[in-house]
Image (cartoon, rainbow, N blue to C red; front, top):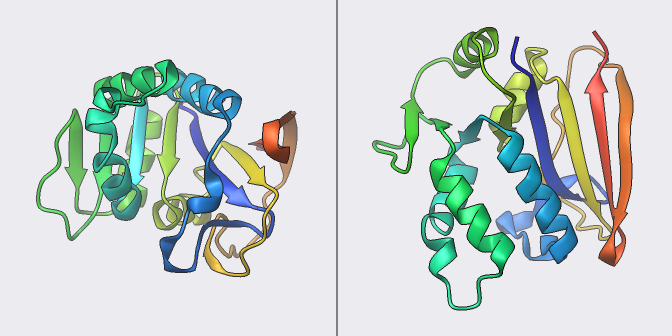
Length: 187
């Protein structure tokens, strides 16, 4: 069974975006950006909700052509284009860049994808990840916690009906006081 990983940058008070979808607080250091790039390279399939898809697809298809792009950003853009992606949305009509659109039951499709062969999958977007969390499909959580409180916005975690016990796998500190923690779900 394939592993499903949910990881994002978040604030100390648990938000992936402040009110108004503001993510200006989340600018990663070069070292943290490289860490995320390595994680993306290890993923064989990326699953996106609509909002995150719109954010990623508005920049990364040409991110390697930006005048100030770093070597890591160039590699991230290339990897992003090459990695197979699935977007879950009932409002988008078309996707591009090695991407497939799913308009139906996200949990059923993620369950099917997990049962298939292949390497690890990453899931991004709070709503999509929340549905996968409630269904018990997340195998690993990666939190890059930035030392800022925003007081509200889009939470990383969704409300659950039951507890989920986790094992700490990794803790690491990056420049700027960002603390990365990685947890595996106990099964």
